[in-house]
Image (cartoon, rainbow, N blue to C red):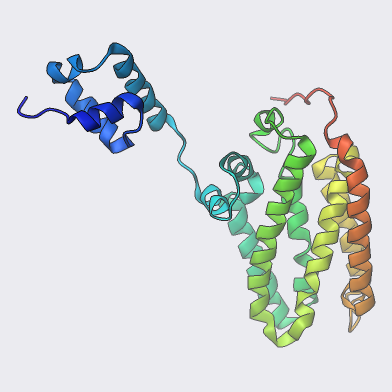
Length: 268
């Protein structure tokens, strides 16, 4: 060989402090240079290969995981949250398209169309956030060092935050309706917490279905009114009270999420 690895690089390689590109360069050189190999112990060479394999096999963080990391979320928590089906690109694209369609319809009809549909989006997100047969990582997440309630709450909070940001952006296209176009927020919050509240008894999907149908029944009775009941001042106060009461009840329900019942079997 016409050159050899510098002592400082070889020492860093041996103690594991050499960055990945340098490790690859040293490994390639050691494969062809007996003199440099003899300067290392067998344990150092084996440890270097193990570190190289680990760096190559490490999963590449996706967009959601990187975004959560930038927000200060710990790496292990960000990885669990990034596996949420309702945070995947296809789901978020579907949410965006639904919001755009609702905004377009609101321009040709009452803003009621937009206000009635948008609170259902986080409810649907909650329905597909956790559960056997829905979440492909369910068996992995239930054995994570988190309580089931905490994990579900983190996922739902993330889904609600994502939907809130997207809906707020869509609301800007309806600025002509003024501040009342923001009336979707409190119903979204209340419906999301209500869905969580009844999930232990009914399951995520049936619970979301019941809440969604109840919401549609409520708004269907007022669609012909000039000011739909849920979006009046009294209706907004009622939504805030319902969200607060549901949140308190949810705190007393947390043990139901951490039940030791066996995992439901998937059918093939």
